Amino acid sequence: MNFLLKNRSVLVLIMLFAIAIIGCDRKPAGGSTGGNGTGGGEGGGKKTVAFAQMENTGPWRIAESESMKSEAAKRAGSYNFVYTDAQGTTAKQVSDVEDLIARKVSAIFLAPREAEGFSSTFQAAKAANIPIILIDREATGTPGTDFVTVIKSDFIKEGQRAGEWLAKQTNGKAGIVELKGTTGSSVANDRSKGFMDEIGKSSDMKIIASQDANFTRAEGQRVMENIIQAKGKEITAVYAHNDEMALGAIQALKAAGMNPGKDVIIISIDGQKSALQAIIAGEMNATVECNPRFGPIAFDTLEKHLKGEKLPAQIINEDRFFDASNAAQFVNEAY
Ligand code: GYE
Image (cartoon, rainbow, N blue to C red; front, side, top):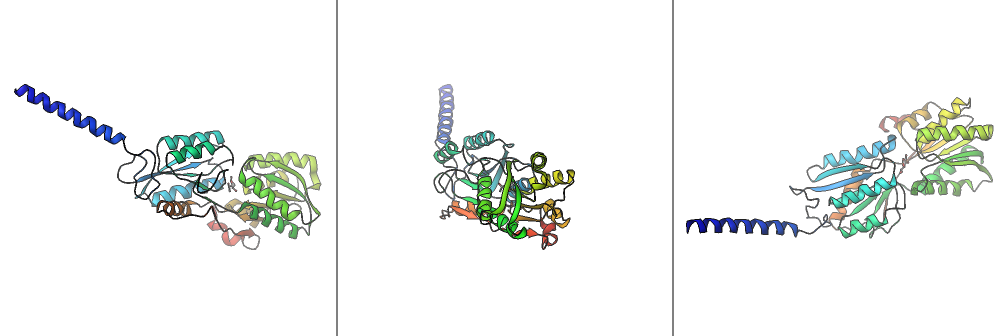
């Protein structure tokens, strides 16, 4: 009798344990879109949010990653933070996001390297109830459906500001080299378009060469060396889609015995510290600001979404303009 009783209570314990396990499994899958789910399979009521970065090279992108990490650290009471680095490959970035979805994080900030390639990822995130907020670049898809919203600068306006400034600076006559950002990125398309819109207003503003230098200094330098060989003195201006490529071009021009900042006017986009220093040194002329410090606005936007607030399709950062008149004033706060 005693033996039977003992066995029975063991059996009951086993059954209770089994029920508990099954019960756990019945929890809704995926991260929470509401304000009260714990999501992320995390304990302690914290949400796990992720930032899927495309690469972490160059001051702009390093500043962006740092801003996201330090904002997450400030909000560590509410969030665990996961960071992935796709090392400059769109395919890796897609699989990084797929892994984050499989891990059931509560939300994903995504800086998409290229505009195309993410549509099935967006569907998987939607099916798992995981909101995606795009930061810094656009991806093809519908805001409010495929992703929550996109926070970015107005890239067409950046190109227009660069074009307008250059036309004024050169009295409407220039032989321009355009160093473009990564082909397939929303940024490169828009920065070209805005610039062309403006220089198209003056018939003597001519693009004499236009090439992809992938937003990097090394490629900017290499591409510029080749263009100098082909075009030489025809070059009177460089429009680079970012400061890193402009700094590479400056190196190439100097090595060829040309005078960047004087004989060849250099304008680019971003506003990083070494560009402002080059402006102060007289080797570069101007840069349109593109702010990489997304951390605070990214997390604020996520919190609004989690509270159920309706968000606009795009959230646009306001940017400044740096040239010889103000570079010294802002250089210390630059990244
Ligand atoms: O200008 C560039 C970076 O996506 C807006 O990408 C960003 C651009 C930025 O590599 O420096």
